[in-house]
Image 1 (cartoon, rainbow, N blue to C red):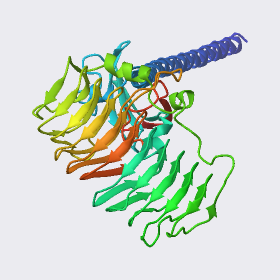
Image 2 (cartoon, rainbow, N blue to C red):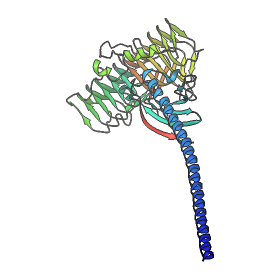
Image 3 (cartoon, rainbow, N blue to C red):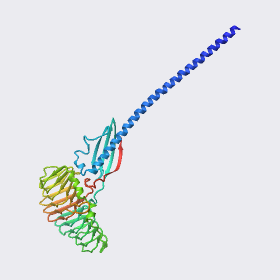
Image 4 (cartoon, rainbow, N blue to C red):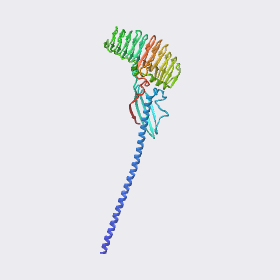
Length: 437
């Protein structure tokens, strides 16, 4: 009896010990699992922290990049001729002045890219080893006067030359006279508030509109290639390929040279003053230029300007001449992509004595106050075996444009050839993209 009880007691002790062992093993396993989960949690948290930090710097780099783009747009809108005054805009537009927060940006500016009148901005922002690159295209509103190859608030006379050619549309607040001597050709539409006369072998390839009469006496095979529309008569022995309309009412041509209208389409005296205020070079008094200085940026001459030597300008240069301008030497813009803008707000512009003026850009003579008052400016004249060639725009806001005895006049419309001649404060971003390395 005793032996049986002892046996049962031993079995019970063994059973309890086995149960304790199972519990211990389970506890150890549970601790191991918890430890593993803790390790995984720590690793995961550390990874998330690293990812979060990288994301933060990446976002910061983007903000810095955007800051560079917006600063560039601000400079374009606030500072006339800003690009022309940069030493190397396609490498770094803000050298030594490009920090934002904890990072920096590098801005590269490409003028007339991808098209004339637009600006391509490529900006890379960097912070704590992260970088971001964006490219933006910005465009601005242009002066409507630049829609014309030649715009005159006076008469336009082309005569006594072997070859005077205007490629593009023409507006004249007066008469257009294509004389009998030589070949005078306008390849575009013509608008005149006065009369239009076509003689010799001259021609207008587009339409002709006049508030006066249109007289066609040319012996060219096609005197007017389009329609002839006049408030007066259309007469002569020449040919008109399109429809002839006479005694048209109201007048077919709007007078764009009235003060308030003119102020809304051209560069005003206030705009020109902005260029003066931002001039890179100011020359006080009259200036006789022999061509030995390759100016860039904005050049302001407070008196008269005379070019007596030979000058070739590479890059972009803007001349503001407060007096009159006389070209007896040679002025050229080269290589392709270089532009010259000539602003003569109160005086006249003359090429004579064998002089040549060949540029890509704009010749603007005359101006008007923003309220439409005080229209000023002289005439544009080329004579005495001289030549004026402008790939862009020729504009006389207050005077005539004349190619006289021995003068050769050529205007090839390109608009806007010079992105400096835009309405200030109108640059806006039209395209953007992120460039991923």
